[in-house]
Image 1 (cartoon, rainbow, N blue to C red):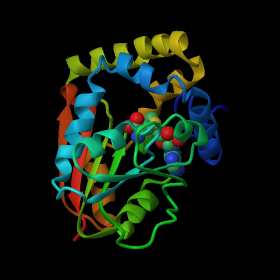
Image 2: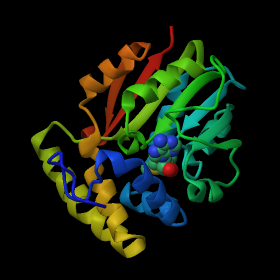
Image 3: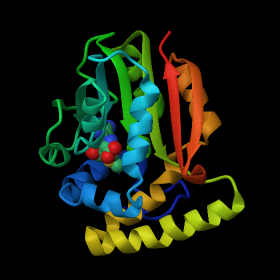
Image 4: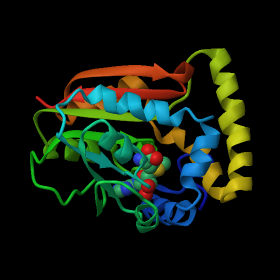
Length: 235
Ligand SMILES: C[S@@+](CC[C@H](N)C(=O)[O-])C[C@H]1O[C@@H](n2cnc3c(N)ncnc32)[C@H](O)[C@@H]1O
C-alpha cells in the first residue's frame, strides 16, 4: 500500500490502486475473516446483520442480492429469513470460503452482470468503504432493483458523541489493529480500522443514495453510532 496523496492515513491506498489492493487483501485474509469479525465486534455483528435483513421487509422467497458478500455471512442470514440470496463479490478467496450460501457470483459490484429489475432487494454489509465509487455502486443497485424494491446497507461509522468517539478511537484505532495483527494480517487490519475515512457522513451518504434513484431513505445508528444502517426504496 502506498502513501495516499489525499491527506488520509498512510495505510490507505491511492484511488487508482484501491480496487486491486482491496481485492488482493481480502483474498489473503479470507480464511480468518469471519473469526476476526466475531472477536472485533464482540459477537455483535450477527445481531447487526439480522437488523439489515429485518429492515428489508419483503415477502418470503423474494430475491435479494447481497453486494460485496465476502464469505457469505449476510447471505446465510438472508436465507434464514426466508429470502433467496445471490451473493456477489470480486474476491475469489472470500467466495471460496463461503459455505451454505445461496448462489454466488464473482463480479465487481460497480459493474453488475445482472439485468435491470432482477432483484426484489439489495443488501450490503461492511463493504462501502472498500468501494472506489459510491455513486456508481448505488446507481447499479437502483438499476437491478424492481420498482418497490428495497435497499438495506450497514457499515462502520464514527460516533458523533465525544465520549463514544473516544472509546471508538481506542477500540478501532488501537485494539482492532492489535487483534488483527495477532489473528490475521497486520496491514489488513490497519487498513480496515483506517478505511472508515473513505465514508461520507450519514447525511451525505443519504444524499448519494437519493441521487442514485432511491426514496424514503432512513438512517439508524447502532452501537452508539459506531455502526450505521441505511434503508431505502426504489420508486
Ligand atoms: C469487509 S468485507 C464485507 C463482507 C461481507 N459483506 C460481510 O458482511 O462480512 C468487504 C468485501 O467487499 C468486497 N469488495 C470490495 N470492493 C468490491 C467490488 N468493487 N466489487 C465486489 N466486491 C468488492 C471484498 O472482496 C470483501 O469481500
